[in-house]
Image (cartoon, helix red, strand yellow):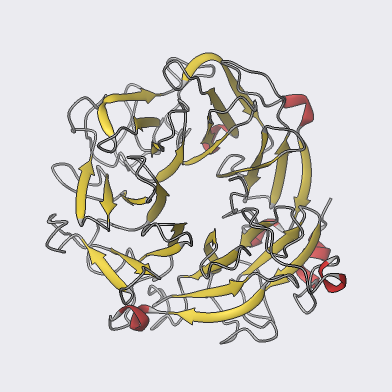
Amino acid sequence: MLLASAVLATTLVSPSPAASQVSARACSGVPSDFDGDGRADLAVAAPYATVGGHARAGSVTILYGMRAERRLTQDGPGVPGEAETGDAFGSALAVGDFDGDRCADLAVGVSEEDRPGPGSDGKGVVQLFRGSPDGLRPGKTIGSGDLGRKRGPDRFGAALAAGDLDGDGDDELTVGIPGLGGGGVGVYGYRGRAPYVITQDSGWVDQGERATDQFGAVLATGDFDGDGRAEVAVGAPGDTILKNGQGSVTVLDVRRRRAAQLTQDSPWITGRAEVWDGFGAALATGDFNADGRSDLAIGVPGEGLTAGQRAMDYGDGTVVVVYGARAGLRTATSEAWSQRGLKGRPRYSDRFGAALAAGDFNGDGDDELAIGVPGENAVQVLAGTRSGGLTKKNDLLLTGRGGDFGAALAAVPGPGRGEELIVAAPGTGRLTLLRGTTRKGAYPGLRPATATTFATAAGDTLFGYAITRTGS
């Protein structure tokens, strides 16, 4: 167990333990392997951690090999800038190979950097750390100015995602800028093009824009059409199209300059758009039917199912899943999930779908879907199948201790073929690991009896607010 005192007292002043002996080693190409030793590593954000006496400055803990810990802060050696009160270093995380050297790199959002005044939003930056055989090393800092925009209180870096958008073999970085007008998405590293920003007003996106939309508050990447290039799914959970705060998701094909908007009013999507649903408040991509194309899971944690629910209450929550096809995401094969048809009982404070993660937990080649239910301190897991995707057969309800258990999720490699699940309870600063088991068919794969708390920190740091997925 990683004790709070250990997390908060350790700084990244040396390479990972094994790396100092193998500094000449080439990188492995293993996803999320920051130090080239062939094992996936984990990054865990604590955006409210106190650093150098500065409250809520934020830190990120790196668990090399899921064990040995190092701490990243803005006060670390070689890191540009300095830790300041309220910066929220670690407000978002993304892992990708941004320079093509086969070492995983880490992008850290610092969305509240340079706040103009008390109570205001930050201008925000993104801090890059480059992977190497000696572990993560500080890289450059990216801000709105690097993407051709004037800096303002836009919360640049509030969301991050990595994916190979241009098909050149290395990853591009997408940056959420939800406070830029109605919001925006920055694209950094696209081959043959300077970094730039996409907004709802961009000609090829062509959407109405309102200051409260939060376009770019949530990001995910996936190859939904199977052409070898990733697309970007952009959540705008505050989007008001016909109803206040109904939410939307826009899929951006940046290569073809095409955009497709999804809402609960889209054809064949179950349900209907309602006020404060927050459609798009969480996103995850995975291949739930093993057809070689990414599928998209969309959290709708504000969805009300309980009779007599009042406006602005937390929602019972639902999750909409849209499957990939040759022409991209196909709403005709979409489905909606809630606890009405699964284990558990929907309550208006559950927030089912507030967090999502996809991983092959039973090792049979298709992904399962883990759904956070933090208001219930629970996680629901649905099995994937090759005969039609997700199924409620053998659905699993995992319950945990308080502190918003299930508010963040990540899939990580296991010792066998299957992946394992990490569940965060950031309100108490606790990470729980659930191990998978190899079993073909409609089985979630995870074993509740294996649940182990393997890392903790002080509850007021929001340790576990963001976790990097370390699977492939």
